[in-house]
Amino acid sequence: MERLKHSVITQLNSKKSTIGTVDFTMQSFSANDIRCQLPALFVNSSVKVLFLPLNRLDLVSAKCMAMMLERSDVGVGPPIEELHLSHVHERVGETTCEGFIEIISALGKSTRLKKLVVTDTHLNYTEVSSIASILFDIKSLSSLVLRNCGIDHKGICKISCAIASNKSLESLDVSNNPLGNGGISSLVVALEINACIKKLKISGTQIGGVEGGKAIAALLTGNSSLEVLDLSRNHIGDIGASKIAISLRSNKSLLQLSMRRNALSTVGILCFQLALYHAKNIGTIIQSNHTLRYLNIDGNICGNEEVSKVAGYVRMNLPRSEKEVISSKLAWLLSSENGASDLEEIGTECIPILLSSIGKTGSLKAMNCLLKHELLSSPFFNAQPKFTSRGVSGKTLPILCDDDSSANATRGYNGQAYTNRLINAGQSLGTIKQRPSSNSMKV
Image (tube, rainbow, N blue to C red; front, side, top):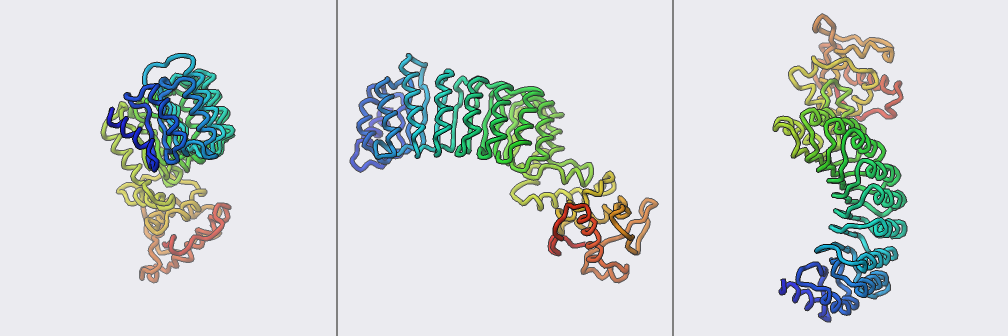
């Protein structure tokens, strides 16, 4: 520790200092040591990351730090881009509180600060309000971490009001705070307005039950920018998980979701399986989630078989376009032994979606499946095409094949003409504006 301390002091006082990170939270740094290094820090121009122990800063040191941070844009002090504030030991004295507010208030005028981290500190309502107030003004801050700070539902309401109008914040971490369902609900309302935040961590925030599940479901439904969501170490349970899983079907932005240690049983895991791959029929597969690429369900009450199934369904979503994922899922369903025969009848509204989504892979089987369910007899088709056919289960099933197959000649079937008929039916439903290219659709 003493060596590290000596190394930091030496580099900080060097005339050609290139040190990028200064950590005053090391045990070997006392309050007096920090005060002695302030002059060197004031003239430094290389430090971008600064760690400060709040309970080792007296009021004079805190005010000097605040002045340095406030005037860094005009050449006073280093160009701080990341500021970490924490309590190394127990909280001491009223001067620490006053010093904290001095430092936070100075950040409101910064144009360089990109990340603010406050951890292991019990913040009162006044201190939380000081953080919220700078969110209205600061334009450069992209990441805010308030982990294990004792913030309750009142404090997060104050933060939420500021977040709703903030346009720069992309990452928010309020883990290990007793927010409860009420606090999460206020945060959800703010995030329905804020379209900038991409990463949200609310691990260990006492979310639970139906109310908590509904709040998260509302977030996934109303927010279109969120890509990473950490809900681990809460008490959401199976009912709450079912609400979240349903909302995933309509969500197109979320890439990573952690449901670790949320008291989920096999029922809750099944809800996520159905959200990712519901093999009831073609329509339910198309309506499944095709964008989620990471789902953590460790630490729940379920067997390895359920975990493996979820992992397999998530792998189907891995880095590909939504169109390719849908095509893969449909091909998997239609290529299974009983996939086509077990499908329930689907509505005609699925025809244009299917045509524009499945692509070349599996399109042949998909078309045969559509024909099997007699969708061609719908009023959207003016006349039945004449095909050579064979009986299947007492019904007539036209047989489709690739355009370049010689079998078309023997069956008297023009594949492209029939494809056009299907596309025209989709256009009459008003859901296809342009005809798919021949590369993406071939029967």
